[in-house]
Structures are given as structure tokens and as C-alpha cells.
Length: 424
Ligand SMILES: [Mn+2]
Image (cartoon, rainbow, N blue to C red):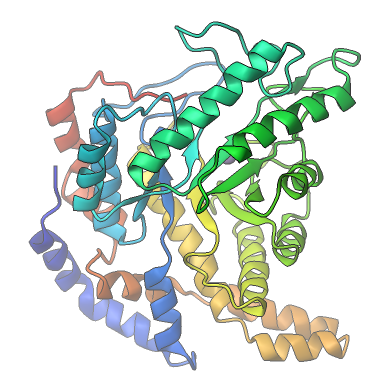
């Protein structure tokens, strides 16, 4: 289904007077309002193809209905999100779940919806029906060279699919590690993984980047071969200029200071970008901003300050992507909420009085530093984000319009109630 521009316009018209009042109130306090709005308009967050279906847990999956049955329908879903919020202008594919049979046609379809292809994702964390060797004991780290070769070839295959679609990066997340002491020789596992990554790196086109994602635990519970940002950075540094460390917010040990990690990676020119999600206990993959929006704001504070210090383009120079999974919400509503939370945190970071903060830091005025940060955090910037959406043709209240238009009901009518999207 497509959302008609008229329906969005009618929805906005009904909410306009209230919006203008709220926007005027907050805009009055902001000096560079036009710059802030432009940055918000430019900032796009990629949607992962595997988040469009209902996610499961280790204990079960409660399927939704009207889930996309094909890559084409996944693109259609992201197109719907983008029509509503004008901020989801990219899709990130997962191979082999989303192998395009006709890359040209897929690319054209995405373009119709105003979407580009973000990072490609490989999969060596599960066995596919037709594969020769098992990844039960790892992939790029495996003790058997033949298994490593199979995993390397798969990654190179993923790059080829990506090239056809116009993607420019490969994200490698490895489930490799060990679940029991003694199972693995850490040094050999590291060196095998490095060697394998070097072969994949050698297959990258000139304009491509390799993102090395880390994760502290799960599925392996004793060691992970790319377990933290230090290990990822080691690989990225040894690989070369096109390799970067990817931060997934849920992939740290509890209470890790993620904003500090981000600041240092950015400083070292090694930050690839993000997989956004939120969590309370582990890799919970909850809606962005649903548990700890303050942490998200502090991360964006480091990002904006660090990117500005290096003259980077906020929208283009890092990879911005959601990586979440939904067991109880409508996946599309959840994604709208996640994108909104990201843009709110970004907007709050944009209105920090940077000069005053730097002066207060220089004076060791700790209380003032906190006042300045929290003045931005406690500003209700939702009307700014909504105004940016309005000016680009999106909806003032995307979730509300999604429900008014009965989008899910229409998708169920088109696709049926028993559909299951490929993914986890
Ligand atoms: Mn991730």
C-alpha cells in the first residue's frame, strides 16, 4: 500500500494550529533554529530489513500479521515509514535472508520510495540449509581452514550483492567465541579471525567501508572473539583505513560508559556508526529511547561535539541504523518510535550551548556543566522534530496517522494474517 500525500496533508492540517503554538514556544529560545531544522531534515536512519517482522525470544515468537513476505514488501514497509516520518530513507539488508533476484528492479523499487541501501550484513551465526560446513564452533575464527574459507566466501558474496544495489559498507557481526574455559585458544582464534577479515577487506571496493561490530556475550557465554570495542579497534587498526568499529548500544557489559567509548572512537577516526536500540539488562533490543533516553542524549552530545570538532557531516559521515527486535509491538509502530527517539536525542544535542559548556569545563565548574547539559535534555524538542517532518512532507504525528489510516489492517488484507517475514 501507499500513503497518499493528501491524507498526510489532511492529518497535518488538523493538527497544525496546536503544533505551531508548541513550535513557536520552543523555537523562540533557539538562536540557530534554521540550522537545527536543516540538520534534522538531513538526518536519516536506516531500517534493518529484519526488524519489519515480529521478533522472537529464545522461548517463543508471537507472530503479528501482514508481515512482509518478500524483499519487495520489506522495501514497501520502509517506504511507508519514510512517507510518515521522512527520516527513514535507507534500508539495511541481511544476506541470505534478502538476496535480491533482480538487483536492478529492487534498486528501482527502493528509489521509488526514496530509499537507498545502507550497510549490507553477512550471516555466519547460523547454518543455512544448503551449506557444506557448520558454524557451530565459529566461522572466521574456526580451527578448520575450510570453514573459515566458506565464511570468507559468504562475506565476499554479500559485498557483490551490495555493489549491485549501491550499498557502500559491509557490517560483520560474529557470534564466534567460546562457551567454556579451555574450549578455545584465544590467541589462535584472534589471529584466525584477523586473517579471515583481511581476506574480506581485500575484496572491498575502493569506496566501501568494513564495519566490525562487537558484542560482550551471547550466543557464546565465556568469550566472544570480537567482545568489546578494544578488540574491534584492534582488528580495525590492523585491517586499514577502510575498517571501522561499529557500536551496537546493546552489546556492552552492564553500566558501560558508551558515550566515552563513542568519543574516543570518533577521536581515533575509527567510529563506523551505530546500531541503535535500548536495553535494561543485556542485548534486549528494545525500542530506542524506551529505557534510558538520557544515555542516548549523552551519546549524541559526544557525537555532535566530536563530529563538529572534526568538521564532519552529521548525516553522511557515520552509519546510522536501528537494530532492534519486537516481540509485543507492531514492528512498524515500534520503528516509528525508535526513529523519533533518535531524532529527539539528536535535536537535544544540537541545542546544547557548546561554548558555555566548554567554558564551564575549562573553569572546572562542575555544577554549571550539568546545568547546561540538562537544560538541553529537559527541553521538549518534539515540536522541532515535528516541524522538520512537516517541512519535508511527513506527518506531524506518524504513529497516530499510521493508526488513523489503518495501515496494518490494510497490510493484513493484502498479505494475509499468517505471513512470516524472514529474519530471526
Ligand atoms: Mn547489531
